[in-house]
Length: 345
Image (tube, rainbow, N blue to C red; front, side, top):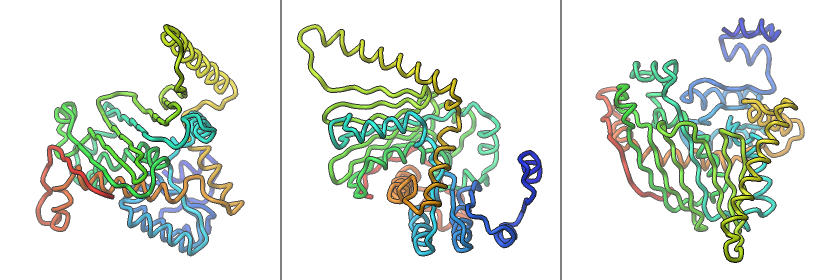
């Protein structure tokens, strides 16, 4: 497969052995797109060989591994980032600009992230359900672990490191039950609070099709991003006299929707509207930080916080699975119907 891809893009050197590649090529950057269980060992080896590292999501299996990689990167004066490409779509870049310019009236007081996943693709779901040893099934959070980091990372950007409360509730959808999902959970709801009082809510669902949104609320207004339609809607807190409150706000929302459509048409004509725009923008920025020796496009703090939040979510969603981890080679883990708990992270 590597040779076929090499022929397609004019790449002459293809390898099936990591050590051989690092010795022969000494690459400036290594992109790691293997299953998450191997991310830490491969990334650390690449760093120690002198290469910068781009790691696909989820960054590592645990926050401990994430912190260890960043310690190595700092010690070796190298850069590391994670493939949270949805952070760099045109609509997310616009949200970040609006937030910096004070569109919500100061520090956000509440953030909501919604992330959906379609189980209709049998090419992906079939092997996972049919093979108990599939690498997705072996992750601490199983299907959730492989998908939710995109949505959690959007919350981490606006939360403080000191998380005082986290409550996670997970269960299995009726559709997954019919597909024979066994112990796999595919519906997740998470409530979070940090020590400054900022709250957050995360929803992952395989039943709410096509819902990928971020909502940012502050004392002076709110911003909503819809990744599915590439749109940004800003709501400014303002009182209108009498019945004008029923007319002006809807007209403003209609204008913003029209503006989003016109902007998307313009970006399409200019070839800036395509599925992988966010990935290309993230990679471009990452390479620029390597050249200029500046800070990576995604702060290490956010990547570590994302990993910490995910660790706690999976500890609550799969308590029986974690408790039996030490004897997993002797007896199979129990299959929880769901879990709920509150903990400090």
